Image (cartoon, rainbow, N blue to C red; front, side):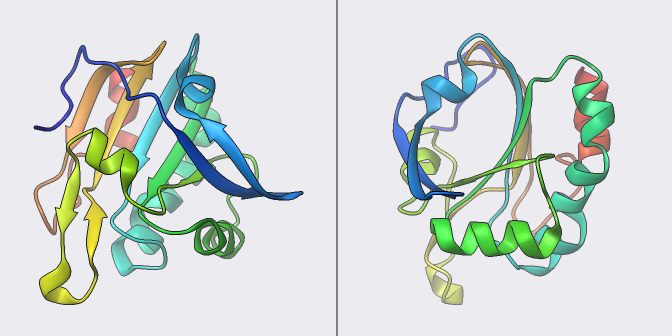
Length: 160
């Protein structure tokens, strides 16, 4: 069952590649006491994710943060090294925190997993964007499979 508006983001520890190598971060430390825009892409370096979804949040980061958002977080079922390479390729800088969900644990815990094994891609996370306040989902824009219509940065900004 997919997470819904009014529900809390699951508590867990994930790993990302920082300046000092692989580091751990908890979802509680990301979301507690903050307003966060969290968006998920099916995969780093994939066409729509690289051409539209992530770039929209990078380009609109200042405007989004100007509306009271503490952090913009991009998650994908990719390992920390892939997410780090993609961040460099996309020049995200400090605009977007890249949160790898290497084993898909966050996607599964939120009911947002998406089985693409038939296409050789394994289990991924669905494409969505949400506004989270103090760990609670305040708005959710979940895409239909293969679509990119409601989870754009421009659409999420309407919720802020």
